[in-house]
Image (cartoon, rainbow, N blue to C red; front, side, top):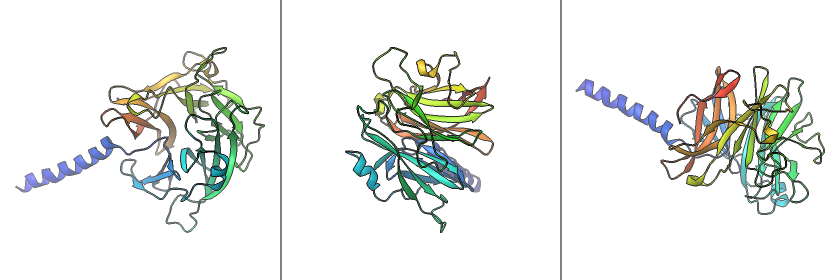
Length: 323
């Protein structure tokens, strides 16, 4: 009887852990950073959704970054009511920088803002998000790019760059000023570094969500192609290219330029996941993690968090786990 009781307890523990992995948590556009022993997950949501975890499995919901929608964003973007998209978190200048997107679906009337905090621990007396407002804004007709989906990376010379973009002219890159609060480039001189449209081609340019990760002397540009946010009809896929130089040119494994429709498929949907995309890459505890959301085929296409180990073969990222 004692043996049976022990087995039942063990089965219960394992089952709870398995469920926490299989069920996942509902997110869109996730990004992760670790402070001390805690992982913090930021994702799309009202005021920016925040969750914390000690093991990347069980997640605790924290207070959102903003209790109310930033005034500047409401005044600048017609139709914006506080649902903030695609945050990006990084640590520079002894503080955390949280870049975020404000927009309305299907329009390039958009802007990227930034907030800072000395700590991510809500129990710390220094915890306080300070919003610095708009970094860059796109406007219909005036700009043929979309100011959403920011990602920040600092190069070997200490210069910080922001990649961003969704549809229109594709993925863009601008240099930031040293304080990371504004761009150091004219909005009329912003280069495209990735596009799904080949030269001379017209039509939709279904590419977005850039993320750059430095590894073994290369800058790897990840992006998502095709369509998100459609539940069971989602067709999201992740692509990747690389370059020795942060500004590119980026090429895929077939040496096709990402500015000319290139991009090696890293991960696509299958019978279990209708689409997978909007990824981040994070190095912690000696591992590279691929963080993304997928549309669960076994749960009516709901968007859920996925975290996988990112392996490398012949200088290119790969996922060995079967989705």
